[in-house]
Length: 455
Image (cartoon, rainbow, N blue to C red; front, side):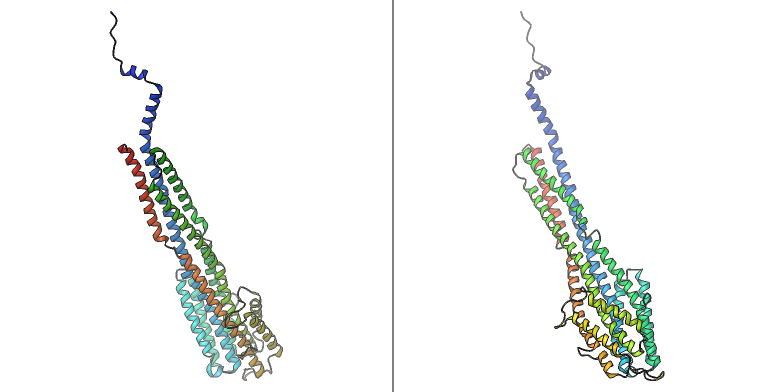
């Protein structure tokens, strides 16, 4: 009799199972353990890249808009207001000297042109003070300018009490010196404030949020999100035998839309800010300075004539200004206004100044006598309104420069407004972020639920 057969145990059964079946079971067990983890990991990476990309885009658009708005609402208007104060005071100075030359000073004082110019200067200074209200460093200079303007008008008032004699001339000379003093005068202080604001505009132009560097965090996050979505779609397609994952495809399309939209906005913002805060601000300033220089030339010649050369230092500065007017192409448009050639008028002003100086000052009055110039031809050549007189040429040039300055400022403000516009991204970024996260979550959940239910 033989030994009875015994039933195989689990160990012996396992030992006799084919090796391929063991490896297959091992692979199946490994897949069942890691597939849910991989789906969760991909979903987590998706959220950790898509959300920062949306946040980076929204923050850049918001901060760049703030920078552009500061340039548009504060710095550029402050520059223009300060230039307007300088131009108006130079016009007032010219008007006061003109009244002395014309002989109307004893009757009307410096005249209505002077009064109007001082009024405009006061209004422009108030506007500049409002724009610069947040700048503590500007307040002392503004107070100093305000005090000097009061002193200037006081000196002109003293001159008016002198009638047409030496006291009137001395008052106007002292007032003009106060305006034009090289380092401490009103115009010099206004120039320092203007230069500070122009530097602030350049800082805004070259700042982080309006540069291409500000887009780097967004591009890094968006690139990572793109890679995560593509890898997820490839993995889920292979693992679950699906050709497409529509929710993830929607998230990918939304991401591409955000990338294109943000790129266009960033490029537009950078270009507009560079143009406006660079060339635009420079041209606006140059045109306003050209207006100031035109008035300065007439005022210097008027003061030199009535003082018989006492204002030679003003003449030297006026000569420098006239030379700059003729050579600074950025400040002088070839044509502006109704058929006005600014360059031709500036050249004619140079010739008229040379003619006036060649004619001299005329007979010298007695010490206590009327100081009004007695040569009518010289006075007419200086104060006439026709195209051969210095004042007439200055008025024509100033009219053209005023029009050009207004056009350039309008164009600069338009570019800054475009730079500050988010082009709808302020609303689109949150909506696209919600769409991407929602669609992506649904896409991952569908595959996870399919795996869990055994589908």
